[in-house]
Image (cartoon, rainbow over all chains, first blue to last red; front, side, top):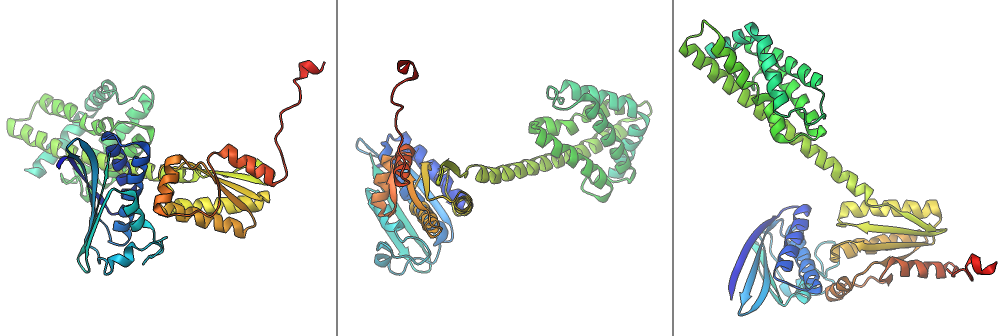
Length: 134
Length: 291
């Protein structure tokens, strides 16, 4: 698998979440994702960016277009240095929220992506990686 | 040396003011600072005269520190000019050039001056460069700050403009949402809608999300809150404008709207009419045939 393009954006305010969505949309169009797949990865990115902002206290997102054989894909990595998640299984459960949201963001992002990977160390931060393949 | 430079500059500005002003005005006119009628020539000339006068006064304090106290009135005048330029839609280059184009006339005047030797000339040129560069940067800073202000105000205006509540029929309201639905926008939307429900004694409110590019859980939550608040006011909501890709995404997200939803605003309006006991029918026969 080769990375064909890498971009990074900060996630520090609500405006940044909008910027992330716009950039993800542009990259999704660039690798030729269909309208439904575009919407899915944009929505997943929106959820994770807002988690990074609201629960991680802000962080960064790395956006990569990747090539595996002839398949193109978009891989997004959200990273923060926030308090981390103590119980990932609980956090992934639908309708569970430690804030005031619907509690569907993490689980929803997983269902909207082809690949989903989360790692978190309480006290030092969280990293979520998702990918959507054409 | 700096004091010396200020002195030379002040003397030149006093002795040769008319010529410098003339040359500056010519440079401004040629440099397209008029921007095709955005600003009148007379106005430009008045501004130039005021700036030149204040520059001379500032230099009389024997200082070249453009951030210092002696330059405060001049900075204020330049700030005003810069702000008005930003609002009138001038480019940053035009705005900065207003100050920078004063350099050449001053250099020329220094050269013309008969009793100036090489070291004094150098001191004068250096002093003029230092002061005018700093003042030019100052106009840029003010220019950018004014632009930021304009952008901020426009942002607020957009937020208000893009959340109108439209009356479709007696008791039927429509709320076409456009753009990103963040917490601040939702607050405005909800307030407008609830007030309109009271004013129009509405039974049904159609919330159209055709113009919302991304529906994530936060947007869904805001929608649900708006619907719940409208219900408490005694109005039923219909959500319309859910595109196929949005529908699929919402299913994957696991969001349930628990509200009547339709693909298009027209469908939603038809439902609303039916619920309020009305029907749209085609006129039986065109007027010509009846005759």
